[in-house]
Amino acid sequence: MALHKALGLFSLTMYGIGIIVGAGIYVLIGQASSIAGNGVWLSFLLGAIIASFTGLSYAELSSAYPGASGESNYLKHAFGLDWLAFIIGWLVAVVGFIAGATVALGFAGYFSSIMPVPIVLTAIALIIILSGIDLLGINISSKINILFTMFSLLGIFVIIFLGAPKLGSVNYFQLNNGFAGVLNATTLIFFAYIGFEAVVKLGEETKHAKQIVPKALLASIIVSSILYILLAVSAVSIMSPAELGASKAPLAEAATRMSGSDLGFVFTIVALFAMMSTVLVDLIVTSRLLYGLGEKKELPKIITKVYSKTGAPYVAVFVAMLGAIAMTFFVDIMIIAKAATFMIFAAFLAVNLSLIALRHNGAYYNPSFRVPFNIGKFPITACLGALTCAFMLLDYSFFELSVTLAFVAMGLGLYLLEKRFGKGKKPVLNKKKKWAYS
Image (cartoon, rainbow, N blue to C red):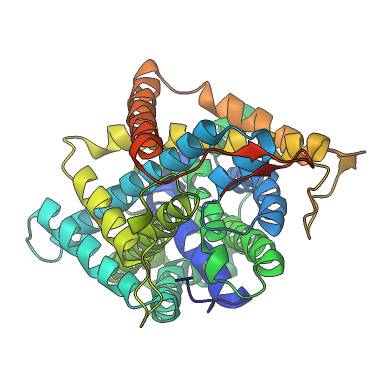
């Protein structure tokens, strides 16, 4: 049974904004400001440009192949390597498990400041509750996500509003460590942009997906970037970069300073909603990715079962829930979370290379959206995206590489088991020299 097509441009864009504008920005703004100084807004602008390189590649590829398997589907069509496509899809699913657990544990930490509760058990309870919302179907979960996202944006709007009277009071080009500081801060805050790629996994539940998905993906990056830049300018107008960097809750402190009342509790509630939004979207898109891999017969067919009343892939939802819960038991989740960012940059690199390959070899490649700035068939933005992702990968240690290789080995094991005992078929090259997967 197919998934229900219920999403339009607004609801899909809100999914993208919901996962990008998470609670991390409430902490990152302080650290980034202390590195870049008043020019921290330049770091957010640079981060947006870098994210847009890969975002444009996703936009074009999703307009040609709007299926739930996302990155895996792109690599299949670009290179015809079934195993490599599955491994990239599998690593993105693992990132979903880790991200869901990391943010759920963050939620539990914030919640424990209001009410003394066990951290891990609270995180697990949140994952189970939000998975239950996912089971209600994409229509209901979309409305709940919009509500969560609106609350999570509240803190950003408050700072922008409170900082408006002080705009122009500081030199916004005063840099703490020159342009090198701006670049260092960009590396830090770029992680606030990761998540824009999530919307492509919802293509099978989107009306007119080939047209809507690229628009929603780019709109979510643009809207989030504008909010981030306005937030950065307002924050340094209210407090000095040194004060922002020294604060454990920089935005809450900035709001308190301008309003004259303690808004720490309000910002804690806002952060809780931001994290709920992020975990909800993460669980939804991870379950759709698993469903998509099942559709491609790279995971057992049972994972594609859909609950007829709600249109939710209930087996995939259950697997995504278990994967996220399993990750909550790691002793230091932040160490494994850094390995997850290594995996997602590897996936971004693969996506950019897929676009370049399809432009060069794809005689039957016919996207409804094409990225701007091309030299003939060659996409300049995809090249820049590949180079920036490769540069980001150089910033990781052997440990993150080792963790990634361990998950690659696990994925290869699953792939071989499915090919040996499952009903999946290997890709074949038809007479038109086009890869077919059935």
